[in-house]
Length: 375
Image (cartoon, rainbow, N blue to C red; front, side, top):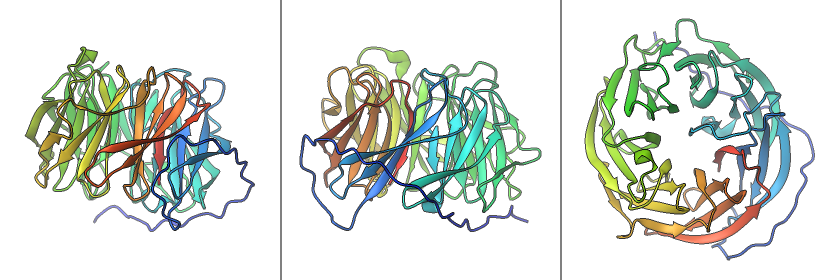
C-alpha cells in the first residue's frame, strides 16, 4: 500500500507587512494579474530568520520584513542548494536551521508566514530539504545522511520510522537532496566524492536500503534540477578551476540508474554551483559564483544541453556580486539570484529565447543569506 499522501490545507495567517520600496534600475514587462513572494533565510548564528520580499507584477521586489525560524544558522556558507523550499501548492515553507540541527515549517497564506513547527532534522547540520505531497526528506551534511518525515495538515513533521539512510561515505560534502518528478527517487549530490547518489523510494515512502551510486561526469557536482522526461541537470563546479565550469544532464531510470545525456558541457566560467530550471523545462540557469555571471542552457526534449551564448555567460550579475542560490518566479518570467558578495538580490527578466535582461537590484541582504524560493 502506497504511503498516505494527504491534501494539505493552508493555515490562515495574521500580521501586518512592512513595506520598503526600493528604486528600480530597469523596467520589466508588466502583467497586472501576476504578483508573488520570494523567501530567503538569513542563516544567522544568533538566530535564523526568513526574509520576505513581495514581488510586484513587473518583477520588482519590495522588502516586506522577516520572521524568526526559532532555530539557529551558522553565519557562513553551507555549500548547498535547497535550504529554503515551498511545498507543492505553496501551503508550507520549509527552512533548514543548520546551526541548531532542525527544520522549521511555516504556514503560507497570501505570502505571509506563521511558524507552525520546529523539528530535529534526524542528523547534524541540515543543509537541504525536499517535499513531495506529505513526504519530506532532509539532507544532513554534518552526519552524512538523509532522514524522512511525514508532514501533516497542521504543518508538523513526524519522523518516518526506518527512513534514515547513510550517504556513500563520510565527509562527502553533501550539497542537495531532491525528489524526482512524481517522488519515485531521492537524488543527492556529493561534492567531495564527485558522486550522485540516488535512492529509489518505495510505496511506503522509505528509500531503498542500498542507493544507486554514479560517478559524476564532472568534478564537484553541486546543485541540480529536473526537466522533462526525468532529465536531471547538474552543475559541476570543477573544483573552482578558472573558466572550467560545466553542466551535465542525465536520464533517471525508474530503478535510480543514471544514463548520461550531455556530459560536462562547458560554460567557460568559474564555479557554477546552483541550478534553476524554468517551469516549461526549456531553459536552465547556473550561477557562476567566482566570476559573477549567470550562464543559460537550452534544454532539448530529450534533456540535451546547449549554451545559449557561445561565450557561456548569458549575463553579468554585477562586479563582485558572487551569485549563489537562484529561483525562477512569475510562471517562468523572472530569474532571481542572491549575491553574498555585495549583499543583494539580483533580478532578471527571462526572454522568450531564454536570454536574460538585467532588472532591479535589492540591497541589504545579510552576507550569510542562504536558500531562495518563491513564485
